[in-house]
Length: 218
Image (cartoon, rainbow, N blue to C red; front, side):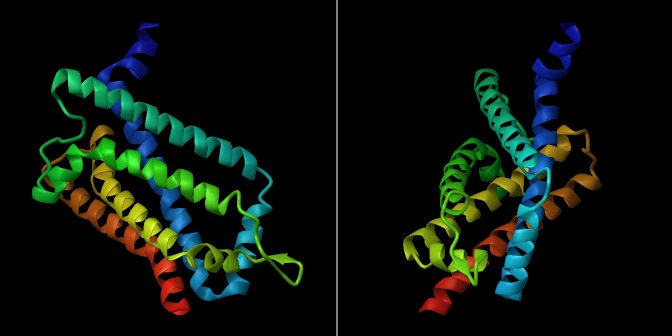
């Protein structure tokens, strides 16, 4: 029990696993963004890629694992938030050198996380549980994007959601590496810069599809 308490229940242990789940989720986001950008190669490429993903034998297990990963990350975030409120030692501030926006992002991780959670719930509802249109007897995932983002209100909500996700990542990724022990006067500023770049790529990349659909449909 002492080993379990030290690894999973101690402050350092919870921050470590928060960092692990954060990095893994960022890797998933990077893959998901790459898959989404296939959209710009046209219906045939996008539908073929999406159909190939649907045929992965262990897809259900991967989805269950992903939901479990999200759940653990959320649970750890909530626990650490209340731990830090009681100790007056906010998680993952670590004296960020970004200042201004970086400090604001670090202090509002719990709230950006809440917005991202709401965004993800609506996103899954719209894309995972929606009926996919068909073309020539095959699922038209490319057309689904046009169908969903033809709603200006939803498209704008999606852009807002990924913008908040980008803010969350801008601080969360660098904090994750610090929690994993990567904290050095030379490497830390580089990680802060790379985290900011990654956040911009995520925000712009995901937002590009609804913006394209809105412009094309105008």
